[in-house]
Length: 460
Image 1 (cartoon, rainbow, N blue to C red):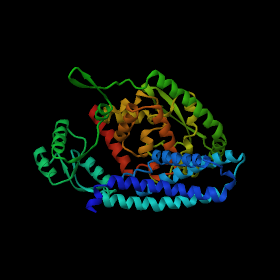
Image 2: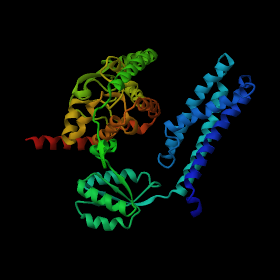
Image 3: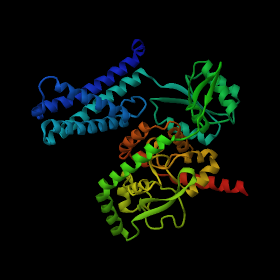
Image 4: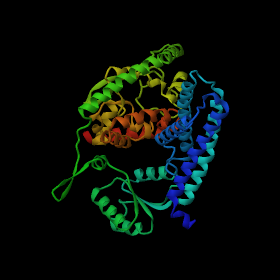
């Protein structure tokens, strides 16, 4: 095993290639046995085969199917299965074009089932190989706030095969010098957000002693990380542009918003009509839920959603949605997991209030509270709010405001049209991931109330 560890990157690459080939062989088998009339003479078949390989690799990479050891096993299987479905759908259309007529569907569906079975087996094997080659490092967690440290450790311990956190220490109870001595006994260190001088000192110490470091970034860390490096004679300088989207990018983004939202409305209007009738028949209340939200430059607009809760759900108290929330209607329980309640926002996008991709627009009350707790929260309003976004793809409904802010800043600083397209396609993936719609617990709501009271007391 020690000799194999030297070649572990090559071994994992071979495992991924074998996965691609195994899935492709499944397609070839169905293609040749069920659709012989679509086979071409000469080298045309190789073009179809190459097309399948490219499409599958692109979709698998897009959805994170090759992030073995980083994503959890069930997400790897889900991602590769999605790649199989989308690739086979496109190939179904391609073979139908070759034949000049729609080919029969059942053999293709059978092929998909077979390929997903292959995905299960190969993903499991690749996962086992990865963790036999990459063993979890012994880690020390360093934090300043006890609650923040406990939350961080709790999250990382959910993935014990990747993170072996053996101890957590607080800067409130230990000096920097004491923590340095502790670091010597560990292979990796995770540094939470705390006072900059102490963080810099510990980071330098880890770097000089060859310790792997995991950093929880602040908003300024993200801005600096995406800066450009320039030389002024013999002095390197970091340049933060802080300009948001360029005029050309904004024009292209708006054009895409208009086109996609218009097409989306044309395609989904029967679905919207059906749910509108169902909502009305359910309790006779209003079909649409309107709420003031804040978007670019602090502009306030009315976001449109299908009503998924009982009328006047927040009449007595405004609180986030909790798991098994009794305010959600029977129709709402169907809509919310697959985001159907968000479809009316296609009209918000068409009218220019929102964009397809961007930071999720928050309620005025939330923006006020979050900005008091995290002054940099207002930085996310440098671009227009979106129907989907970086924080919606990689976060959850109950992700903390600070983490949402940092993810939104990553999107703003790294913006490109290609990233927008990627996030739109990634949205399809999270539609059926239950954890992405995980609601607040009662503890979350208590914490938010406590934070609000602290803000109000500080103002007095």
